Length: 218
Length: 400
Image (tube, rainbow over all chains, first blue to last red; front, side, top):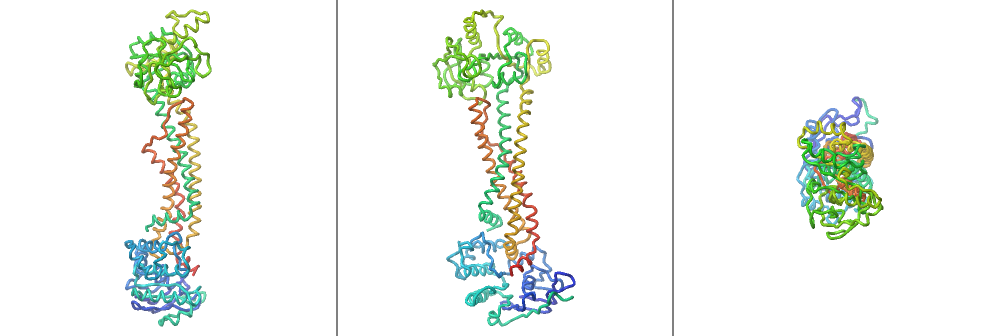
C-alpha cells in the first residue's frame, strides 16, 4: 500500500530533516511511526498524504508515485484514497456532524451519498447526533465523527497524527479501539504517527525515526 | 454539501459580521440605485409632460421659467401676452396648432388653466366622469385634483387669485364641475381646466369691480402658447424669428428640459459619489472580514486540503462567500433604492410636484449588482490568493 524508497526531505536544500531509505506497508496492514519529538513523524505523514513532496526519493501510495501527479490530481488522489485523522480531530465548526462527512465526499469529487455517510456515523456510534454542530458534541463524539469522516470515502489508507496525545488512558483506549476496529472493518491500511507509548502494545509493526536534530547536512 | 453551501455555512456562523457587510453593500447599491431610478423617473416624467409640444411661447423672461410654468406648472408665469399675438402666430404656415393657456388662478393650491379642448387631447386624457366644458364657468378636474379636494361633477367652487393657497377669492364667480378626467400620470392630473373665455369672464368681473373696463378683444390676454410645428423645418427659423422680431419669447422644451436635467444632474453626481464611497467602505469592511477569517480558519482550510480540496477550491470558497454577500447586499440595495424612491415620490406628490413612480423595475437595474460584485471581488482577491497559497503542512504541524 505504501512504498518509500530513498526518501530525503528538508526545508532547505542542504539540510535533511527526514531520511527513510526503505519502508513498505502491505494493504490492510497497520503500522506505528514512533520516535522522539521533532524526528519528522508528522512530516512523514504529510509526505505520504502528498501534502509535501520529497526532496529526493520516492513515495508511492497504492502503486502511485505521488510526485508524478499534478497538484490537482494529487489533491484528488488524497481525497479519494487517503483518510486523515488529525490530532485535534478537527471538525469544520460551521457544519453539522453529517455535513462534515458530506463535505468530505463532495470535496473529493465523489457523489454525495447521504445514506453512506449516515451508515458510517452509525457504525461509529454517533447516529443519534448527526445534526449536531461540533461544539454541541462531546470530545468523544467529535473523535468518532472525525474518524467517520476519514473513512467515509472508503480510503485504502488512513493516516492518524498523534490521535491520543491529549487523552487520558480510558479515552486513549477508546480511540485506539475505534481507529483499529474501523480501519480493519473497512479493509484500510493504517499509519499512526505517535510518541504515545500506550499505543505501542496495540500495533506490532513499528517504524522508529531517528532524530536528526536541527537537521544534518545532506 | 458543495463549496457554495460551505461558504454559506461560514456566513451563517457569524450573523453579525455578515449583516454588517450586507448592510454596507446594500447602502452603497441603494444610494446609487436611488439616484438612477429618480433620474430615470424624473426624465420620464418630464418627457411625458413635454410630449407633443415643440415650442412654448410667452412673455419675455427666463426661458427656463417659461417652460417650468407653461409645461410643468411648477413656476410662476413670465407674464401675459396679447391674444392678438397668439392669433397671429396660429396663422403662421409653419405652425400646425397653437394651444393657449391662461394662468393666474388656483383652487386650494391646484392651478386653474384656461385653455382649449386641444390641451386635453394633447395628453390623451379621457373623461372619467361627466363631460368636457362647453360654456363659460364650467370646469373639468384632473384626477388628482378631484381626489384631493373631494369635488365631483355638479359641485361648485370659487377660484382664488394667485397660484398659491390663500389668494383673494373670486367669490362672486363660481365654477361648476362638469367632468373629471381619468388619471394620465401627467401634469394634467393636477390641473383644473376651464375655457379660456372663462378666465376673461372672471377677470373682467374682477377688474370691473376695480373700475376698469377691458372686455375689448384687443386687450384680451393669454399667458402661454403651446405650439406644434407643421413641419420640422420650423424649428430652424420660428423660435429665432419670434425672439428677434416680436415682444414674445419662444423656448424649446427639449432644450430647456435637457438643461434642467443637467442642473439636477450635479446633485445626482454628488449622491452617486457618496454611494461610491459607501461601496468602497463596504469593500474594505469585507476585505477585513475575509482577511480575519483567513487567520481564524487557517486550520479549517488545512483540514479541507487534507480532505482533497485543491487550492483553487479554497480560493473559490472565499470568493463565493464574498459573492453571496454581494448578491444579498445588492438585492437588498435595490429594494432599499425603490423604498427611498417611494418616500421621495410620496413627498413630491404632497408638494404637487412631478409624478414619479417607485415600483417600476427595469432590467437595467440588475447592472447595479455589478458594482456590488466588483467590490466583493476586490475585497476577496488577496484573502483568496493567500488562502490558496497557505502552507498546509506547516499549519497542521503547528497544532500537532
